[in-house]
Amino acid sequence: MCSDSFKIRVRIHDGPDTADLEALIMNGASEKTGLPHGQWQPVIGEILTRHLEILEKRSGTILKNAPETAVTLVKISELPVFCVKQFNDRGLAHRIKGLFRPTQGLRTFRNGFRLISNGILAAAPLALIRERIDGLVASEWVIMEFMENYLELDRYLVQKLDSGWSKNAQKSAVRQFGRFVGSMHSKGIFHSDLKTCNIMVCETVQADTESEAVSVPEAYDDSPSLRFCLLDYDDVSFSNHISIRKRVKNLVQIFLSTPSLVNKVERARFLDEYALHAGLSSLDRKKLAKEVLTKTQGKSILYVGFEGDVVETPDIK
Image (cartoon, rainbow, N blue to C red; front, side, top):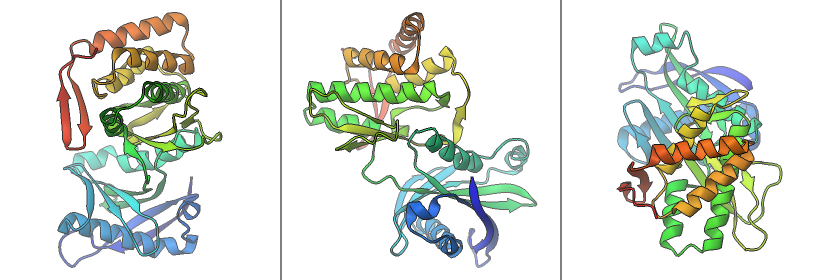
């Protein structure tokens, strides 16, 4: 999976001192960025330094800055924009856990590679940088490609619904999304937090037949093909089979993070398309639909709009 590993020296805390960090580079990173393999070592140090400056001085694009994680966009010279996700040190107990299970940064690094290998689009992880304290992994950073022209699915739906989305286009999008989630589950891929804010979407003129991340719209209309991309995939798991319980969990997460303007008819259409591409039997389809509707009945809907979080009462028509 990784093509190289080396040490870099970066100032990662307030003050003049620097720290030795270990870095792993993903196979294919040079093809993704156009940066020759031998030039990655100094560039990673530059990217990480710029990321930390953005957080410290609030001088650039910060997508997230929470106690456990932080995400920025970093632009270096002639290179493309990079997305940098930082996993903060959470203390000795959490460091010790890293001895017995993969750390969040390592899971992100590995899972991104596995998703792409399975035909599921994800922001490609390019490099993993780790700080160790007394031999234990403390802070981690994952440098990923920036998915240009993509928008979070909840915001995409808001944008389309507010602009007079045609019935044909809406039906096509719902079916394509059902195919994407159904295909993902049929491959044994489970995302523990599959809300619409953790799925990105991009309209394309022509479908890419080499990737199952792209679905072909209905032939009778001019609806665009959509590409779906997963975010926050450090807690994605891979198995030979996904239980009905886990399927229901994901579908409930999607329903309760989808704007209520997406009506019951379209939600039922999504479930039908999902079940078809997930390879479920007729009996399992009915059982799944019943459980999803029961678990979402009367629950509030929460999604991220263009002005922040939106909470809606369950008045789906």
